[in-house]
Amino acid sequence: MARWEPNARERLVRAALDLFAEQGYDATTVNEIADRAGLTKTTFFRHFPDKREVLFAGQDTHARLLADAITEAPGPVTPLQAVGAALDAITATFTDDRREFSAKLRAVTADNSELQERAALKRGGLANAMADALRKRGVSEPPASLAAELGVRAFYQAFDQWADPVNQQTLTELARHALDELRAAIAALD
Amino acid sequence: MARWEPNARERLVRAALDLFAEQGYDATTVNEIADRAGLTKTTFFRHFPDKREVLFAGQDTHARLLADAITEAPGPVTPLQAVGAALDAITATFTDDRREFSAKLRAVTADNSELQERAALKRGGLANAMADALRKRGVSEPPASLAAELGVRAFYQAFDQWADPVNQQTLTELARHALDELRAAIAALD
DNA sequence: GAAGTGATGTGACTTGGTGCCGTCACCCTA
DNA sequence: TAGGGTGACGGCACCAAGTCACATCACTTC
Image (cartoon, rainbow over all chains, first blue to last red; front, side, top):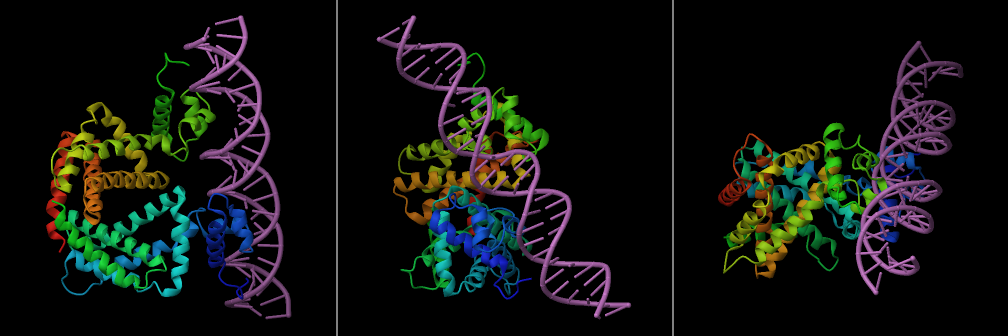
């Protein structure tokens, strides 16, 4: 195999994101993506179950990271504290060299409903993973899902801000701030 | 036009839901759906933008209903009270003869990831519609989205229970109860 | 009764996605 | 060093979702 070349999977992701950014998602064909990566359509579908997934495959790793962080949070903590620990753990993996990639991903997803659909599903997956982990720690049902939802909401809001190069703060800082804001907003509901 | 026959659109929805329930979503072809409705594939796609949408087209109406109810809620109300009024308004439209249809829809959606994706997007649409309406009433940003999220969550939970024929309560009662539970759960977050 | 309008049918086409089979490089072992 | 196994890839045929241009047919309206 061509091991001197970067990962085939990685090449496919890069080629796809670039082409989507240049021409739009719909105007880009799987054959084009594979061509730019020096591969074929068949190989593309061996690495990703469908065209959308090439952009979101990483999210599954995130779900595991979040769940693990909640499971391993030390000592007795409130649901929101556990969620905060999970956010700290995952945001730490977003080093600054991933910002451009993230910005592109966000822009491409923003103007295509097909991708928004997949994004919505993945977001639900993150929330479910966190809620599951919380339940395994003994958190009861309405609070577990609610805390997980707040965590996901904080993460996405922070991610959106972080993808904008204007913003200089760390993703971790942004996420902590977002979660604090949400916690405070609860009081204004009723 | 064949006005002596039931609505073409309605026939397509019925045919699709029945076929999905009988054979599964993937195993059912758009041609089959159109055939059973006495139409053709082309006509199907004139009524629905894609195969999934035949099951979820109604949700767009729901989004408008929820938003209108929030906009027209009388007097000064808290965000959660406005959301409660919206739930009352929409659940009132789910008469008991829609239960079997709803149960089928829920079952079909449950075991197909493609449909879950669309459902996730539609759910987000409902939440956005309510949040928009709340903001137009002057509710500030984090609370508006949170109240909308709680409302959608209560609605879906109630809907799931209502689709199960074991449950004898009204959808309105179930939704009110679900929202109350969520309101109470907030205290256990931190 | 002729023109217009709206809903439908027909058929060709593109593309996402699946499945089968062949090939080639690499690795391990006798 | 020969030979078999394995894993990644290409080629090709195929199906179904979706698009589009064009024809048809009933019904309305002037």
